[in-house]
Image (cartoon, rainbow, N blue to C red):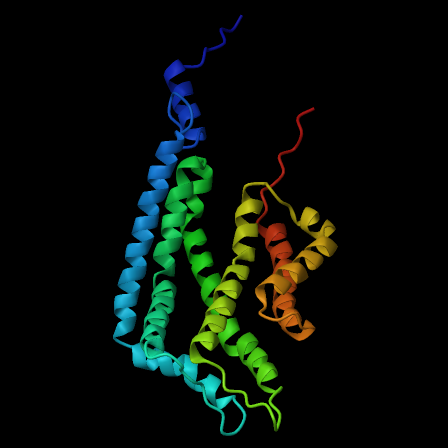
Length: 269
């Protein structure tokens, strides 16, 4: 009668350790204070990266200023100008532009810190997606910012400027214009992260393409609600300009979930 070999306890422990998330120790999960300390460390590193990005952007601040503001001034009605009503407003605008450019420059480092914060709670098979996560999130944010700069905001800006009449002169404050510009850019940068989030969730088996397709009508409704919150005015034109790419990204996410979803394990009868 053949003798069945017993599993080696040491090999079994090694196998279990490989399958467990790295951040878990023998006693269980990390404590709340340990999570808080880790979050503080990653936040400080992200702020340092943004500071370095701001320092780099100061060398090109004049070009960045013209890149953002000159097209907006040209889209105003004939003879229109952007105005500054406070002495410190132009200086503060330069600082805000440098901060925005610093965030864009530091976005790969920020995404790296986000990954390092969540990585200890992931399994070994999930940690190989570190490079795709950082790459896709950075590309998504930059594409969203570019989509806002070249398409959404110019169309919205022309729409607002079209309300000038013979008895109402459109001379917006430059600080208010830039605040609206930043709001739209960051919002669409975050919106364009949707395919990356779905990619990560699909690889972990949290969502499937079938589930996303089944909830398409609810997603469209949710997209228009989010667009109503993001856009600065309640007019349907601005909401549609934001909601349309969100719906398109959702459809792309369904394809991504179908191509990259976690394969189903066949049931053992």
